[in-house]
Image 1 (cartoon, rainbow, N blue to C red):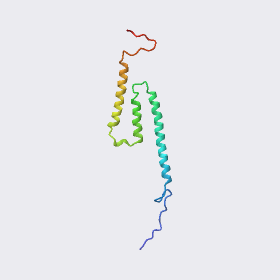
Image 2: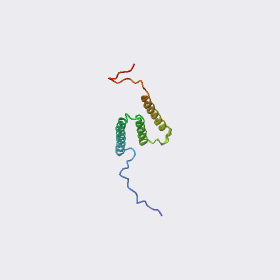
Image 3: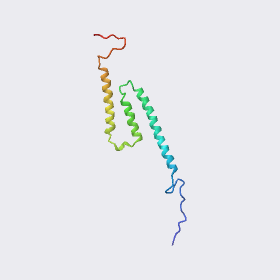
Image 4: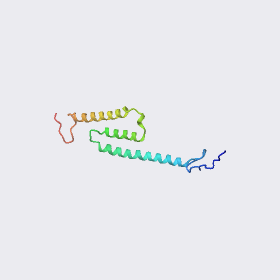
Length: 120
């Protein structure tokens, strides 16, 4: 009892035989690269805006650091990195902001502004 295989499936429309060029794959790679470029560009514009808005606040360095870490987690799979790396970056930014904020407030011998007389 020999059975004949007459129920063969046809080749899918997206299939490319070996040795031929796959233009659909190149178009997909270009679109993926453009999407990543657009995402980074939009995120950079938002980061510049957030940095400008946080210029006078006590968290002027921490906010852009948090945004950068969020961008890295959105684009790259950072699950295999240790969680201490982003925590260390956040703590460094917090300490830089804290020291800048407290050093600027604790300087009583600041230079006088224009028009002010300095007591000698």
